[in-house]
Picture 1 (tube, one colour):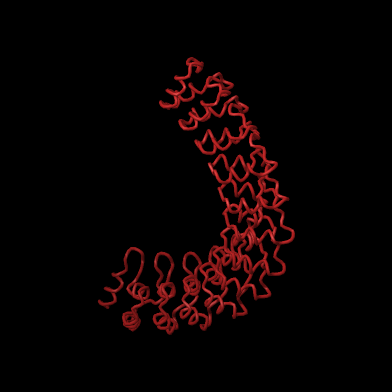
Picture 2: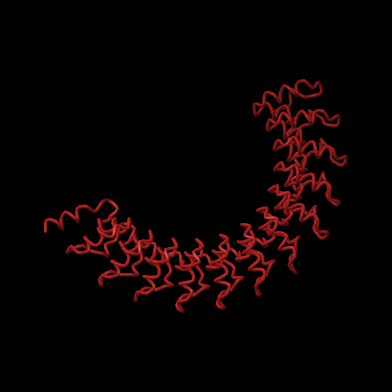
Amino acid sequence: MAGLTGLAAWEHCKGRTPLWCAAWNGHEGIVKLLLERGGVNPNKQDDGGRTPLSSAAWNGHPGVAKMLLGRDEVNPDKPDNDGQTPLWCATLNGHEGVAKLLLEREGVNPDKSDKYAQTPLCSAAWNGHAGVAKMLLERDEVSPNKLDGTGRTPLWFAALNGHEGVAELLLKRDRVNPDEPDSYGQTPLWSAALNGHERVVKMLLERDGVSPDKADNDDRTPLYAASWSGHEEVVKMLLKQDGVNLNKLDKDGRIPLYAAAWNGHEGVTKVLLERDEVSPDQPDNAGKTPLWGAAFNGHEGVVRMLLERDGVHPDKRNNAGQTPLSCAASNGHPEVVKILLERDEVHPGKPDNDSRTPLWHAARNGHEGVVKILLERDVVRPHKPNNDGRGPLWAAAWKGHLGVVKMLLERDDSSHTKPG
């Protein structure tokens, strides 16, 4: 009795017994010794609800798992606090030996979901464990198209992470819907396109029933997703598909070209601009064109590409009256400012709806390089006030931009006393 009392006292604050710890680390000899002692509970859970069998399964110790499964009182399908069974733990980490032992045991449900409605097949697909996925798919009880709590299938997870082997296994199953959207409307193709998994995209596009232009809940297509992330080869693959609309507007009124331009993806921008049907100057719901987005973020290469394309208006205002020059000046992109000022159509002093000029924006934000470039232009009025009567000097002074204040004071025509 004294020995058993000692063993029980070894449980630490997380409720892990010596047996649990030995199973976690795969110490077969210690597990065998402890199991031979009377009074040791082989199903004792830690504070997370995990049994010694779960801990052995998680770390892939088939020898320990076999010993524990040899005990009649061991529950082989005991879920932890997250609803994850020993089989779930083994499949998540790709431990084929342990998974095989568990699948051979009566009472183990190979399709049991955790509290997030994710099955062992989902967990194997997420991490790309094709061997474990194959074992599970051989079981009739396993649903290869079962949705988790966000409507995602095992194929969706495999596609998201680019696991070609698992995707191939799943696409061979008749019960798998290759175009099943999740609760956000994103299909396996959409998720593969977003992350640039070319081979998975190819597999899906070759499959009947996959719509290459299916939009998500925000009206963003696989082409938009690939353009946003800059995956040039995926964009090319999608553009070869019938029915793909490269001018499809998302909920914000943005086309794939805007997504590529905003993020500065020159390769994708080039591919899209080579298509005659693209609308290179399409404004979004706020009036922002692809050029506006590229200028805002300082993407010089993309700005040059767009300016070379017929039909792009380099001085087009958004709904707030801000031109590409205004936003480039406001964000301090001197090279983009120079590129835009090379165009005769661009007015360097064009005010927005609040009468704030590009110089006003640059001065307020302390962008000395941009201020210098703009002050070199004769048509720029350095004293031009906004609708509140506050000029660039006021804006720079208010924000404490000493260098900009000095530049403006050097101009005789700059107002020093605009009201505050």
